Amino acid sequence: MLARRFEEDGVIAGHLGKFGFMVRLTQGPVSYGLNRSTLYKGQGRIAHLRLWRFDERGKMITLALYDHGWRFGRLAHLSLVRRLVRSLDGR
Image (cartoon, rainbow, N blue to C red):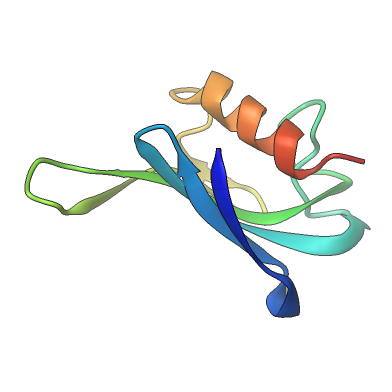
């Protein structure tokens, strides 16, 4: 995993294989954060997560989006989301 941390605003962005990601971390667990055990809303540090890839024309396609709750993509990319969450929300 290649990641770049932006400490000033709690944002981490990077690449995991052919996928890109951006995560916004809170300082501590919050009620709307992504729970690292269940991967649902509740007592996690990740308030926002976006997972994407680029198509053959270079257009960004968002595959999964969590923003204070799942918008889409959790089940379709569950193993990748789990790996990303557990590595970034390490307590």
